[in-house]
Length: 299
Image 1 (cartoon, rainbow, N blue to C red):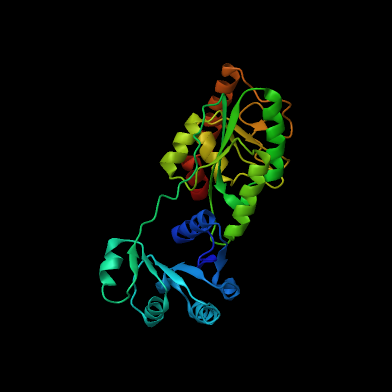
Image 2 (cartoon, rainbow, N blue to C red):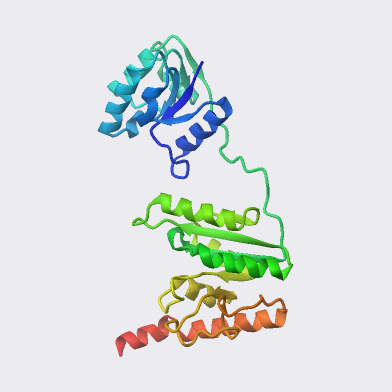
């Protein structure tokens, strides 16, 4: 009996193979195990791409294999190198991810079975319409979760149904684990009201801004003149909920062109108030647009 699924990629947010293996292990009722821990199991299903293994991972795999009583192999591709050939030859059974792999293994192994990979989207729910729609986007590791708790309190007190839509990128200097921790915290704040929408294109972000009741973005200390996400939202007429301090741009004023979360006692619902905030946001952004910036740079 297979007692674990072993792979080299363990982060399902970065690898389709990792996500497949994570779900496969869950359905088999066995652990999903890294190469580093693979020597602790006896009869694993090895599911990986040998072509992606670095030298140290290859060595770790060989060491682990010596500890197994047997193994089975799920192939997502064929690269043809010696390590892969050895894994195939010593496998009790080879599971080919597609017909092309099976065809290329003809005569190589006595027990090759052609399988497939099901879809990896398992979320059964849908995004339900709500009265208030919050949108936020930016670098994931910069999301200020502590201020979103204040926003949640205002939303809960408001009484209207709401949902929080999040789009976030991962900066190359920030670890993916940092981003995962942020999203775990956001889910804890909005356990059944947050929808993560991945890394959206500019046109998709514009669509979200136009659909949102409020755009929310919070910063250490307060919003600054060079926070481009707030500038983009104001240019599009989004009603921005942010945090102001004495170093924020003087042009930004609570309930004039933005909502300051530190001053707000509730969230406006009057369509006329929301429209006035939207228009004033666009007017403020226009005065701080590219033409004005270039004129100052050239001065």
